[in-house]
Image 1 (cartoon, rainbow, N blue to C red):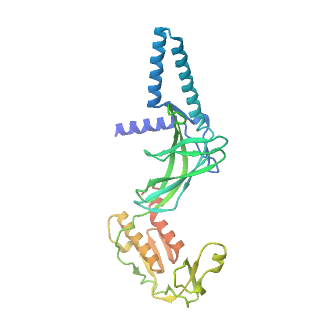
Image 2 (cartoon, one colour; image 1 turned 30 degrees about the vertical axis):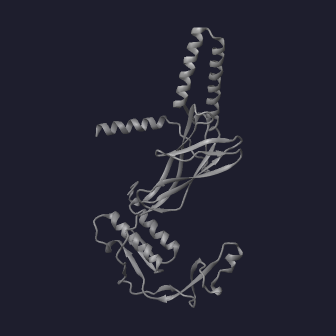
Image 3 (tube, rainbow, N blue to C red; image 1 turned 45 degrees about the vertical axis):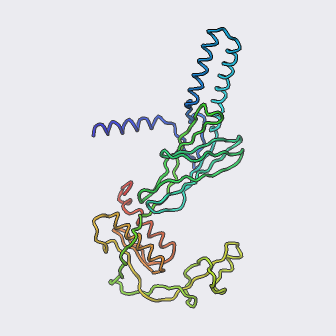
Length: 328
């Protein structure tokens, strides 16, 4: 325990020494010159060793041409180091969150670059040991690149910080900067393959649910057009706005409402319970059943539609966070 405490303190101390790039109010992080680290690469160390050998040989044999070539190559290395540092200076970066995913899937963050007045070459983003393909940007251009991060558990997946580095132009030096980012993606619980059917609410009685058919009067939403759909149900206004062909859906009243209830599943593992409830929510939304969700301290009223399903999945994903836990 003492060793772990000392290690944690040492890690926090070294973290405070790192000059991270903080994002502004608009979410853009601008890399200043004082926030850039630069060190020679393996090629750079080899290049320096060769120059040292050339210098010693030229001095030993009093070869002026050898000295001239040595100093010329040393000047090339110094200029390359300056351009490596300059390739990151003034670069602006913004990380944007992608759509929500389920645990076990790959979450996608969009990393946007703004070059500024000068072109940028060989920009590489690395996160947790994984490195993206190099990116080159023309002056005054914006470029985005996708960063895939595995979503291992439910809750908020926060990107926290990324590292951007470059070896341009000769690869003799590596310059990098650590950029903080508030981007985060919501991770839903992993749904089990098969789940028991949810029960009806016997206390409130039976209420009608809505099923989809064209003769009903209640509007349920729109779905993409499929061959054979009636032309009367096409949303022509959406088509006029160049959104594609969508079909209006209407529903009548039939059947019963169901409740997806935490207490109805008798399992000791809370994560397995949430996985079963997630599968029940997905199946209920697929068959267009009106359903509600009950969790300890959370009740989502009976509803239907994509927004209702998203609210239920959000409650399942964040269950336990409201008790002051940073992670479930």
